[in-house]
Image (cartoon, rainbow, N blue to C red; front, top):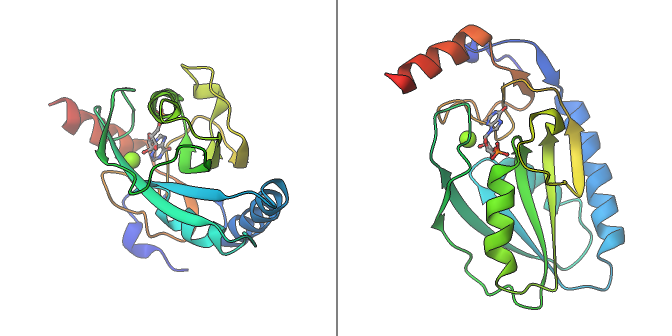
Length: 191
Ligand code: IMP
Ligand code: MG
């Protein structure tokens, strides 16, 4: 795809459309195998996970349910503060359900650690997380990701759901945002 319209953040393409499609198929097959015979609720964390979820659920060959939760993290465009607010809650109760959370990226782990604690109080039968991207070297909180699409280095990336200041989510691949663009963004946020 020609992404000339994203030229101001364009860096290297880290994960191609083809690689994403392969990972989505692999994860879908694993999830199908692991949850066979169980009642599974797949929960997308808006907005970053929306594109990944849409592709992933079509590779899960089980009669799953789908729900969404939206969180907002206090902090600037490229770093999470770990203080998370639920701005749109789940539509269904999760008590006694097998819940699979879908995330775009687990970076410091602060968001997932907070969200999982909140959701555990609702007593699901089980709760796991599937994240398109995992940046284990950025962890501030020792959370583990159960299903990982790609383990990536501590770089700021956009595309396939991931944003920089709410833009570039619709790129069909994952690319590294240019350090200059990210630096500009941090300056703006701090001013
Ligand atoms: P964490 O709380 O640091 O694990 O980060 C969670 C959130 O930070 C993600 O859901 C994203 O919204 C955002 N985030 C972290 N790394 C990136 C990135 O490389 N690109 C875009 N958003 C990111
Ligand atoms: Mg974001």
